[in-house]
Length: 111
Length: 251
Image: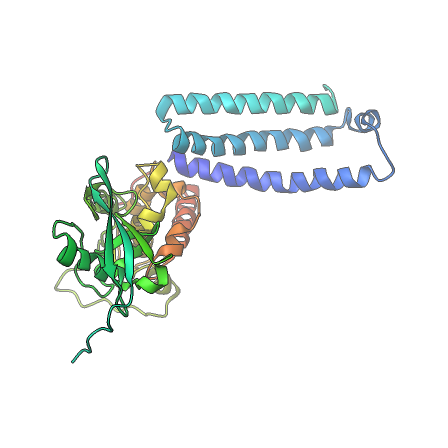
């Protein structure tokens, strides 16, 4: 029941992303009202467990969501199937997760 | 006694696909325009008056049998109920065989794969009663019956199948008609194969492939909404999966 599992995973990851995007946009709009540069933003996010969880969760959800969507494209437009498709999707997932988590580490700093 | 048609005032330039898929071409015909003329009338006129070798399929001529669907100016339509004056563009028509189906010849498609997918989706009723039992009493007003009824008037014309881009991209996809049929049966309280059917529609070419583009609902001549039926199947599959019901076969 791969398709049923992936369908559910994509909906769940979307449900996780939606509030996190709103938090990101809301805080961004609120925080720059008085003018903030990158250094001042980093001073506030570095060492913050809460921002680490927020963006860490977001990156995981994006990696799951986008990979499942790209899997559909690869199936329909590139006619990929089986092991090739699965391996390529795991690679895409790993690439998205690595790039995203590196960005999270840069924003909140290493623990 | 039927009145004779008005004198022909104009003719229609009709391009018709001739031949098979890989070795065919459009052929041009001039067809006299008639009052209340349907696309099927046009095709029939060509066969009777211009070229008797033209192959096409029809049966009832009144929108019940689902045999005569073709692409008309790029859109899948039931030709017996489609009036020429509603779809003609600049006095011309382009008539092709239905999209997404293998072609036999000219305008006649091979429907085998379409009906095979009905079988794959467990699109047949499976009951528990015998001839000796009393006829089941069903309330037409029960919520479940209303859902089943909303999907039940399919005439198997394959217009939804021809309009679906997912079918064109993924040959394994069961398609809107088969999944709509499965949904109707899932809501038939007499049916006993709901678990097995859910397994069938949750597989590789099942309901989860649908992108909800709604081409099926847009062009269905009976105004059914297979997209909504497929969404219903997705919900049922998800609920069954969360309850662990998809991991084992029910029946």
